[in-house]
Image 1 (cartoon, rainbow, N blue to C red):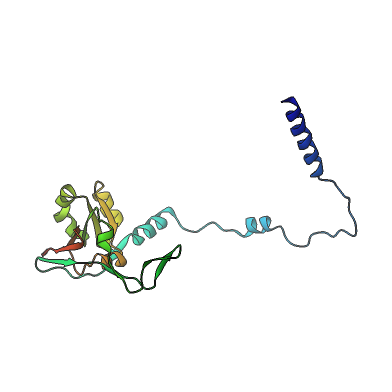
Image 2 (cartoon, rainbow, N blue to C red):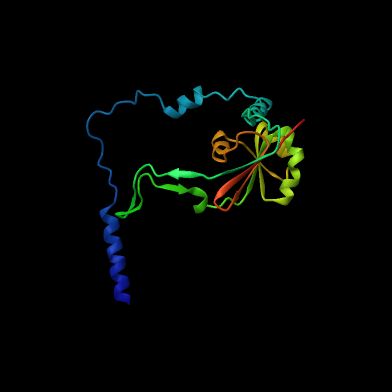
Length: 194
């Protein structure tokens, strides 16, 4: 055992000396550096942003505004939709084709939506608060300020309704309640009058 430790120590000492840094001196003419120190340049020319805290708050509030301009439902309606994906090219994994080009896949047979999505404008939200108690609801706001709503209703899940999400959920008008039933979406279009 002590021979093994001795050999390891000897090997480490040999390797350490072979990588030692040695000053080889200066050869040739040495010139002063003409370029300005980049750190000094940045310190001298960097300017603090001219935004006040109030301006920053206003910009954040403005960024939280949503306006998708979806029409308002005049009467109740129910639609059922399937989400069908057509495979654009053969999908090959490890040399095995798992889906051929042109194959149609019902997405909702493969994945399950665990939430109910309520798509509406800010002024409609008070009329649908019971849904957050009945279901695992997510409110997608198409018109209004998300920050204002989150402050007013801190115990419910509220997001901005992104156009891609609204399209994927097959929502055409508001208010709409979307959930999954078996292999299809159920879209309840609720009639709404102010």
